[in-house]
Length: 432
Image 1 (cartoon, one colour):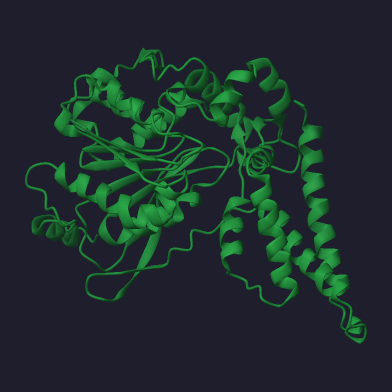
Image 2 (cartoon, rainbow, N blue to C red):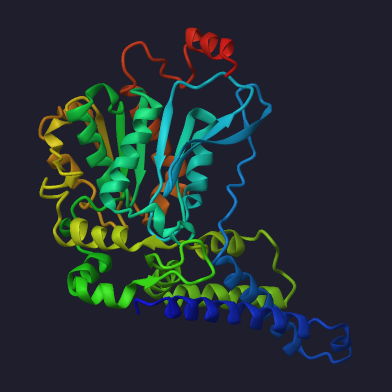
C-alpha cells in the first residue's frame, strides 16, 4: 500500500463518487421529468445531492464560522482570527474578540491530530469565547506540507505545544481534548523541569489515552492486535501528485474516515438513508442537523506517517506515558516535576474511545502534586464527543472547567474572567 498510485486511486474513487452524485442530481432534476409523476426521480435527485455533498466535503477544510460574540454589554462583537505563531505543521491561532475588555482567562485549546481538522472543536471554542481569551492549535493537512519540511512525530508535537505555551506566558490555562492529552501532560512536565516559570497555571485533560490499558476499548484492542509491520504495510501511503506534499508518507484521512464509519456503520447508514428520504420529500435544508454534523465529520486530513506510527507504538503499545518513560528530544520527561500546575481530569461515563480510567491515570503519575491541585470529574451518560462538544459540555463540564481555572488562577487574579483594570489600561495604551 505504500505507493503514490494507491493514494491517487483512493482519491479517484472519491472523485468518481462525487461525479456520480452530481450526475444523478442533474439528470433527475430536469424539468421534463415533471411530466412523469414517478417518485423514482425525486429519490434519484435526493441521492445525488447527498452523495455529491458528502464526497466533496472529504477534501475541504471546514470554515470556523465564528464571526461574532455577544458581550456583557449586550452587543455583538466581531471575532478576529489571527495566526500568532506559524509553524510548518501547525499554527497557534488566536480568536480575538474586538471591542470588549480583555478577559483574564487565557485558554490554550489543544486540538487533536487524529484525522479531523481542528475545526472539530469549533463549538468548544465558541462556548469559551464569551468568558475567556482563547487560542487553539490549528494543525495542517500533511498532504499539503512539502517533504522538504521534514518529519513530524509525537516528540515534535510535544515541542510545538511547549513553544505555544511559552508564547502565551505563565498565566495560560491549557485544555487538551482526546489525542493530545498525554502529550500536553508531557509538555507541561518538560516545562516544569526546564522552565518552571513558563509552565501553565492549569491543565485540563478531557478524554485522552494516558494509559490505554486502564480501560480497554475497541481502539486499544486494535492497537494490541495489529503489529507495527502490518500497520505500516496496510495503513500508510505516499501522497499523490495532486498535492504539495507529493511523496510524503502519510496515514490518509480517507482511510481514517473509513475506520471511523465502520465503528458505527449501522448508525451512519441509517442517518444517510433518513437524509435521502427527507430530501426526496422536500423536507431537507442546507444547514439541518445532518449537514451540520457530517460537513465536519466527513472533512478529514492526512497525518504524517511518523506521527501516526509513533502514537500507536509509544502511546498505545509501549505505554511510555503511562510508565513515566517518555523521552522528548533525547530528554526523559518526569511527571513528578509537576508541583504547581493544577490538573483536572474530565471523562465520559459512556466514552467508547477513551474509556473512563484511561485519562484519570494521569493523576497517579503526578506524585509531587498536592491533592488540593487535582480534580476528577466523570460525566454521567456522556460519550466521547459529548464531553467536549455536546449538551454535557455546555451544561455541566464547561462551568466546572471555568470554575477550576478561576480557583487556580493565582494570587491577585479576578475570578470573574474580566481582566484587572491595570491590564486593561496597558492593553488600551498599546492599541490592544
